[in-house]
Image 1 (spheres, rainbow, N blue to C red):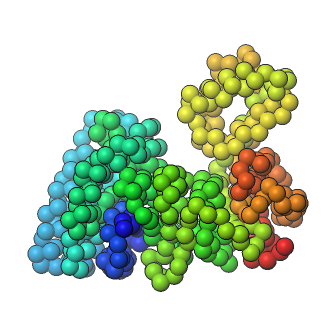
Image 2: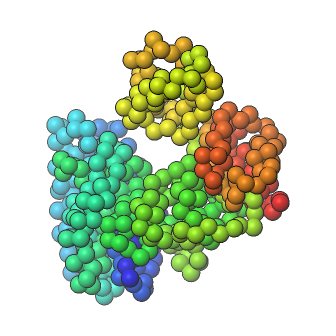
Image 3: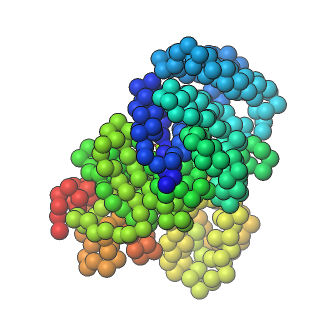
Length: 453
Ligand code: ADP
Ligand code: ASP
Ligand code: MG
């Protein structure tokens, strides 16, 4: 049996948190491969350092070093601390070298390289701590572990096949010989040998990719809440933990804003039918959430509600567009060539509307230039949010969408776009961002905690 255990930022964010994580790891009964995020706040700190520029390098190094060494001093002593320090200095030298070389700053993958530095140090801390508990452990960077990525800067995709062969050679033998590998999450190595990150929160996806590559039996995501909940507990304080979900339900919610999982976490697990557990590192005794193949009915009409903000609706208009399938294909093709993620599409006789991130509006407008002569106009409505509701038999239950939209009306919101029927587990729609929180709370109280039938 092999379990991949991923620990998020808060679960490795302090000496106490690292102690808890190490105890959870050593008490596991199966073979394990550990994946870590950077200590909480470190990735944001590194991104801010990139904004501040190279002239602040010495302050950045000093603060970065202090944050990690102060924790190391609380956890390790004597020879163990010295052994840690030796590896720490080697990694720190490499970080200094890359950050201080002016020529590197214009490299398209430079931001990936710097923002992923935190994982290299949290993994080192945890591996050395596991050793103090009498187990063999080794910290591996994604380079050393053989995690291969491709794609645009800050938005990588894991090459599962090549990762499987790399990890088969580099990680499997360690596990077989009783070593607990602690691997950096968040990034892989692209064809040029450069770090490429998987987007913010990408360590969940890295863990799923590693689970896929190693044919693991379970992927555990250790975080700071009791599991996948009926809504973000920061928005809905009485949100409840969902004990079981199926892959599609979790994937839809993660893609549409449930931050507890990186949007792409589920697919590498689903492909190989590997269960995903979400557990609370502060309360390991809690069951958490088990995500698997089977679909179980829930007691409430909706299971969970998520929201994704900072979106825009871009509507392309052309007379009788519905009859001109080839023009629709050209419009979609242009967006595809520009590699713009689209969160929903809806059509009418003369319009096709795309839901995209606010930051992608300029690019989508630019992508239409080449076919501008075939289009009558483009409208943009910015600052909207997508609400994703997941529940049992949403398509088959009579009146459920009417009830959901009734609740949206009671929350005082106007529905700007609807996506229903494309998935049998979710009903998604778009509202103005200023009413989105109220809509989530209203749906939650009416259909989840309210127990309304
Ligand atoms: P980690 O650092 O462990 O990766 P994240 O901050 O990325 O943790 O994700 C955990 C957070 O996700 C929780 O603290 C919670 O606020 C938020 N969250 C959003 N939606 C949900 C949800 N449906 N269930 C649980 N947590 C959620
Ligand atoms: N440290 C990275 C981030 O903050 C990756 C992760 O935490 O999953 O985005
Ligand atoms: Mg996360």
